[in-house]
Image 1: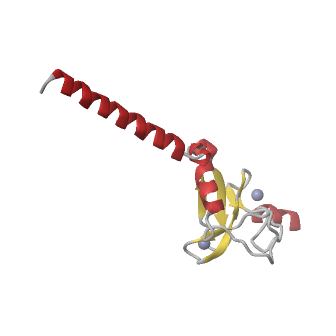
Image 2 (image 1 turned 60 degrees about the vertical axis):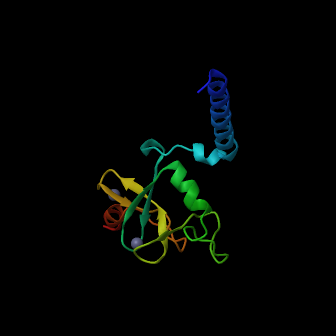
Image 3 (image 1 turned 90 degrees about the vertical axis):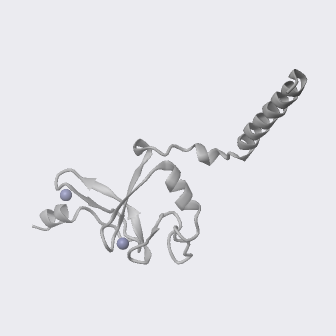
Length: 127
Ligand SMILES: [Zn+2]
Ligand SMILES: [Zn+2]
């Protein structure tokens, strides 16, 4: 192979790499840069089967945008985010909170918008 030919090949290769990089740059939307780390995760719980789900910031954004993951029912308060539970086959996943006292997860608002708290704390309050 002549050195001129090698130079041409190298140029083509470089252009190809630059083009690919540019393509990724244009294609990459800002959401893809949301952290996918454990630190960015929020905790969610299914009120039916009590399954705990950790969603990283990126997963949350993906679920929030997915019509079959997030409840979009005009009959409910749109400010409350309720996700789909694959096991229960219904929208029953809400934000989870942790009671340090009783070492358990609970929710402050169920999918119907009813307020709640740690069941063990509630028991104590009722006594
Ligand atoms: Zn469930
Ligand atoms: Zn408690």
